[in-house]
Length: 182
Image 1 (cartoon, rainbow, N blue to C red):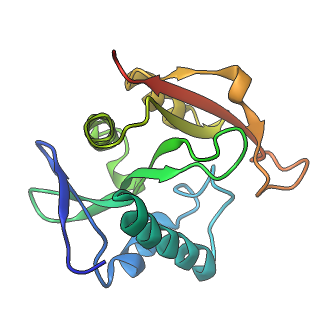
Image 2: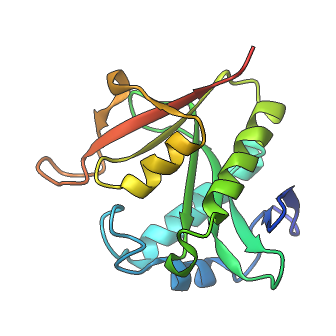
């Protein structure tokens, strides 16, 4: 990926490709006990390096990734929001939307604004007829946002995430879907 490209603009945010230095800032802002509560806890640098590498590959191969979300008023990084291709059954290759925001901006509508804009972008730019989102059942803020975005839970697609050991409370995942309007 060369240079920074703006992908989406909303009234309060800009979603853009990653730039040098973004990974360190993203780790600083989101790798907190609260921010990582439903993602297995504070992660080591190798986890974030893997995320970064997958983001770059996704942007290059598919034209989308979990983009950096910045606040327009001051350029502050708020988190990430965007897409990837699902990598686990039952959502392998499905267009998967996701987000992660720093905790001091939770409840201010940034995640909803960015995610709604991403869904709109997805319907306009990708041929998929379905977009999915996953989370753990305890993450009520995340699945609440999925519902506010018009996504609906499909219990037939709930699954045990293979990245978590049997008995790990983060292993059971629930799946939400949105379908292209015809």
